[in-house]
Structures are given as C-alpha cells and as structure tokens.
Length: 225
Image 1 (spheres, rainbow, N blue to C red):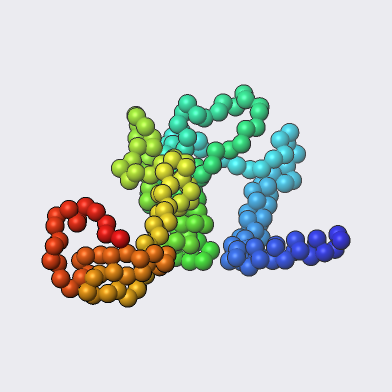
Image 2: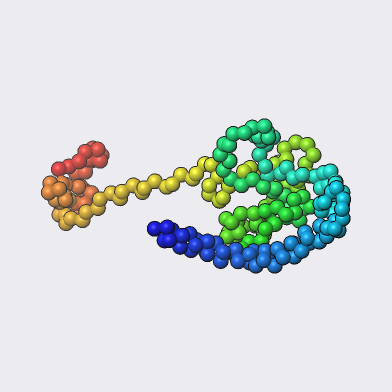
C-alpha cells in the first residue's frame, strides 16, 4: 500500500512540475549563479585572522524608500499584533499589494508574476490567469491619509475568485415555469353548440351554435349544460 500511495503522490508531483516547468528551469539556471555570488561575498574574509569571520558586506539602509504598500490588505482594526500567539483561520480571499503593475511599490509582488499558461500576461491569481480579464488595481498606493483601499472600481478587500464573493447576493435562480393549461380537441354540434368534454360529461356553448337567436346578456354569466 505504501508503494501505491508513493506512486500516486509522484504522479501529482509530476503534474505540478509540468505546469511549473518554466519556473523550475529558471531556478536551475539561477541557483548555481546565486551560490557563486554568495561564496564570493565570503572570500574577502576567508584567510584573515580577525575576531569577526563573516561575510564582507556594506549595508546602506533607506527608510520608507519606497514606502510600504498598504493597499489590498485588511484594515488596521482587523490586523493582528505580534504578541498574539493563537492561530485563527486566515480570512477567505486573496490579500496582496493591489497597486498598478508598473508601480515602484513592491515590484516583486504577486501582481507581476507571469502566468504559467500565458507568460506574456501577469496576474496575481490562477483564476485571473485563466480568464480573459485583466488585472485592475485598487489605486496608485500613494494614499498618505484615509482608507488605503479606497477605489473607484467597486472591488472589495479581500479579493475573491469570480462568483465566490460572499458579500455579493447570489442571483436568484429562475423558478419553474407554470404548467401549461391542458388542451383538448373534441367535435361539437354546430347547430346547438353541444359537445362532450374530455371528462365524458356533455356541455353546451352557445357561442359555438350557428344561430344566436334568443341569446341574452344573462348567458354570459351562466354556463349552459
């Protein structure tokens, strides 16, 4: 049983690898180069007899350049503080930096990830990649006061897949059509307007008679049998 489960898992892994094969190829190309760069950082201090045997680096810190992206995330009142140690379920929907794709805020964000099925298109979610819709930002991200998620596009936060937003009332399904009235065809006597109905009972309709002699307005209010 363990072998069959392992093979089934390998099949699933292979399907994922086929979808992300371009990313895997890029990773295999960049990983050796990245390892070489990290090794070069440590070469300068490799043979020095100093108390500090670390990586040779020179940091220059910039504060809020560019500023952090606050657009597309939960409001401040719903954000959790680091002192909380419980683990509630994450909110449904997608939370990410929802600014224009050419913005200098969070340039490596998910909004700029190429789609696997169409590398020429960049979208933050699989649903958006597989649809004909294009990514629409909330705003430009440079809101120094007020609601950082303010937008004129009508989008909400978090972002839900099409048709799964619980804040939108589902459209009522059309009810069943009323049954059509039963229709029956029977022969009648044109002289008297008499006929036998589908239930086997005799009826008389003066409107069917060839003559209307003796017909009064009371005949419209009563049924002649």
